[in-house]
Length: 189
Image 1: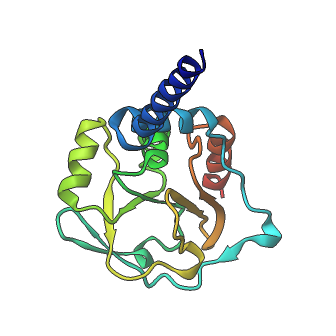
Image 2: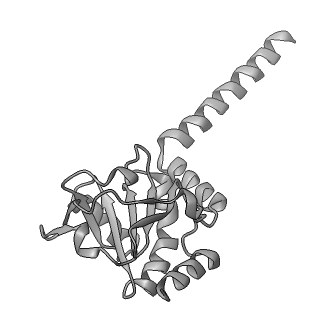
Image 3: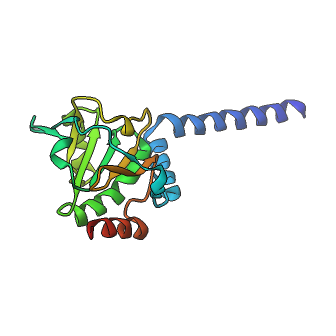
């Protein structure tokens, strides 16, 4: 009888290892990670006024898909939504639909910058595949210190005075009612 228990235990261990491998290294795993991130995404919180930091510089250069160089300085005095992301990042992919909805409604009222280290070819193919219309940029120079992060997604909301009022590392629901209310409040200023 003992060999059967051992056999059953071995089979269970193999099945467990195969499931873990599927979750970690396959498209099925990516799909699961994306949907889990969407389930746990909450509305981002605004940084308390006393803890907000003003951008130390607007000297940040970006390049768009056409090769045009853009400076953050061009957007001084405007509300700027900045998202660092990559096509291989499940948490980034998870929040993209909520960002797209926000972008669709607010693109004419504020500035949106989606910064990737992926090639434009890869990023644009991803945008088409996911039916997204977000404006993609690559960083030419380093971002201001207040927006440096070694983790993605990293998202920042800059108000008209140059204060970082939202700094969110990880997935968030950017299309939430509370975040939209915050944007509407800022736009009235």
